[in-house]
Image (cartoon, rainbow, N blue to C red):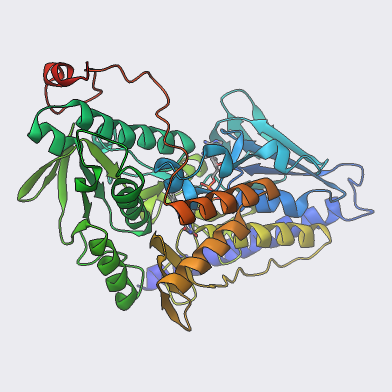
Length: 474
Ligand SMILES: Cc1cc2nc3c(=O)[nH]c(=O)nc-3n(C[C@H](O)[C@H](O)[C@H](O)COP(=O)(O)OP(=O)(O)OC[C@H]3O[C@@H](n4cnc5c(N)ncnc54)[C@H](O)[C@@H]3O)c2cc1C
């Protein structure tokens, strides 16, 4: 115990010493009239998600700072609405904006399409597949990726939802499942095609389950002749005793009730033991399903390995209250890549709201440093509440001071999401699409894209190809 305390004390002293040394050095170098007045302070931002983009925006147009934003994708993605692309309600362009376009007006911001592969802390350089990029201040905001709790082989048989490619892949799987059922003459095969299993009863699983139920029961109800899409079986599997574990029990119960009314089967306390092509195995049950969707977890991008530090929960990098890497005041780690101390112990959740506020905070902190401030401010997260939607007129909202459900929560959810979408065009298009869907129950983007869906060819598992080919419409 004492040893731990001593070590902690020593680490804190070293960290504080390093921070002071860094700030003094930077202050000398960067303050107007310092020893390097002609040189810009080089800020390199890894990732243009919710966190990284706010840092770039906050430093954009500032004199004395050059900003380089590296991202392996050319677009910023509004992940909270990914499930709507996967269920044919929105198009990819409605929820993504080119990073270059977002930062076009900020002349000191350089955007590079690069995959980061490492960080050389000693040399103050970022390592990408193509080059090494030097920095004075580094902001690591590469977020998280789908995590299969060590069962990486499950990824082949269950689709995750983290990128536009994932969402389009799921849209394809979901729509093709109905097409295959229509082609098949075998009752068991049709039932398998019309079974959708979602693993993970968090907000994404709940939203996806509700959206697939609406797609099957309303949008597609009249579109097929040989099958009745309303008979689709949608199962939501959750290992914990209840779904939406981070919400108050009353709100989670209400969401479960709404889902059941929409025809979703909820299995709680059900642990997935294996996922094979077309089959989900629970401890005591085997669920054949054409479409398996994984919404059970994410893990941080390999930032801990890049920085050579011990990863914490979910692979995140533990940071100080000022969001810097302990012992490295020139390195900020924010958003889903970080484990940030929370106000009541534990760490802050991985949410867009946390990532955005951290980005704004870090931009302010860097600006303050460049003005000569010595101490970095602590980050305080303002929790305005958490929302999850279940379907049309159905949502839950935990606002801290009030619990809201039903239509008011749904309206709040819709307004909030439109407000936080980037770009006037996206906001207008999404609002119009939603109004159209609300009035007509139609989903406008029911397109099967990608590889041509050849009759009889199936990517994985399930019934024989011959059975399907034989049932193909003449
Ligand atoms: C389906 C889904 C629904 C969600 N719903 C909600 C919600 O309703 N409310 C909410 O608050 N939060 C929600 N979240 C969580 C929220 O999206 C994340 O917390 C948030 O995106 C984290 O922001 P970030 O900036 O840390 O990472 P991200 O937004 O993920 O951005 C990371 C960026 O880094 C880039 N990148 C990653 N690795 C590399 C690399 N090696 N090299 C270069 N670039 C790289 C990525 O391309 C990406 O642009 C949801 C997440 C998902 C997946």
